[in-house]
Image 1 (cartoon, rainbow, N blue to C red):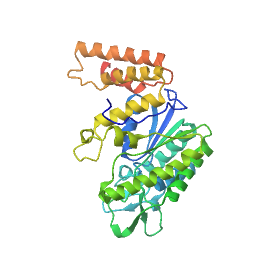
Image 2 (cartoon, rainbow, N blue to C red):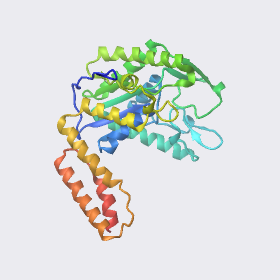
Image 3 (cartoon, rainbow, N blue to C red):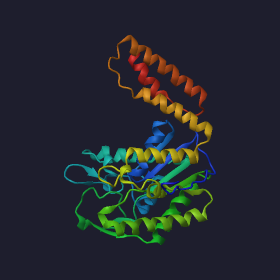
Image 4 (cartoon, helix red, strand yellow):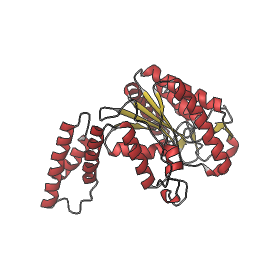
Length: 327
């Protein structure tokens, strides 16, 4: 007897291994899932302009990266404390204008180089509600808590979603012919607009996404939204706010991703690396004891062995971390 409706996911037509370069773009769900890849030490780039929720802002960010746009002082505004840009998340803001500009440009340059050789880009769409700046009509990535009078906000149409995603796909494919793109809809509900508007927003994203999946062979869909709605519909899989997913739910989705994109060989490699990373994160009570010294040496040896046996794996930071205790 089944106590839930399982979401059937076909094995991907392409596979991911430790030689793969991965990009994660989109909502906070994208950042949460990317952490599992990062902890397993995959080569990855995450949200070069910070968290993005809607298709228009994601499309604009990718255009800015691929056109090698350079940001300047005029692209930032001062809110009395920090210099901010409507194209960037608050983590790029700074009390020093030049530092803010440098952080933005450095991230864009790094993203440009990474996009050119990336193997897979995962894009998570969160909402079809978009804020537009009144003064120029452009979508904003972040409002930075500015007065609501500075913006207009509306639910964009299915065709606007389609066009934004088409631009994303074609721009990425133009710079990187071998790229694979995976779209997913964030299962996190935007209940500030109410249940009905949340459903309208998610439905708009689903319809728009379906267009590109059907028209490009290198574009795919991963059913994060469906997994949560059908397999994890119980509130025990949510945080206390009943909106964000629990760690258990995220771990469940991670297992589904592994089954979809990893071969059996790579899955075993990931398990070995994850086990090693637990040692890296192990709390050291007395780093100067003989037992700790033996622990550090053991992990340096383990890191070197993993690198030798897993093509593409890089554990230089971890080796440096343990070596630092032995100096």
